[in-house]
Structures are given as structure tokens and as C-alpha cells.
Length: 59
Image (cartoon, rainbow, N blue to C red; front, side, top):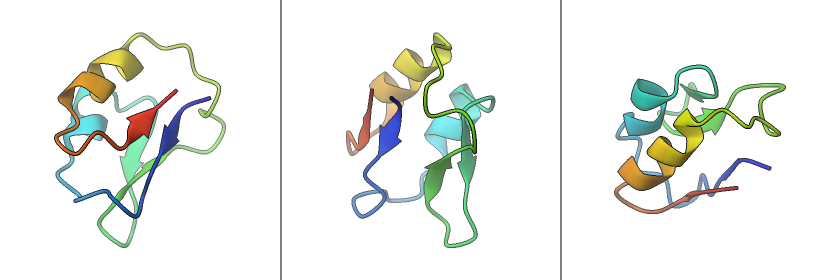
């Protein structure tokens, strides 16, 4: 299950840049998992986890 700790998100935009199929930027400027993508096995999720500067993405 792909999750973002939105409280710790700094809104850098890295995750939707490397994995736009799964992540998007919400209206509050923080990243979120797209609707229906929480169970995604897309390999780009691993890249997004690596790229997150504040380590708030998990699966």
C-alpha cells in the first residue's frame, strides 16, 4: 500500500515528477497518492521513495 505522510511533505514535487501515474500534487501544495493507486505495484514508486528528500513515502 503506497502512502505519503502528508504532514511531513514539503511539496517539492519530486514524486509526481518521477511517478505521475501514482502521485499528484493536491490543492494544498502537498503530494498525494492518486485515487485508486494506493495498491500500485508500479516500479516508479520505488524511484519516488528514493527521490523523496524528507522520506515521507512508504509502501
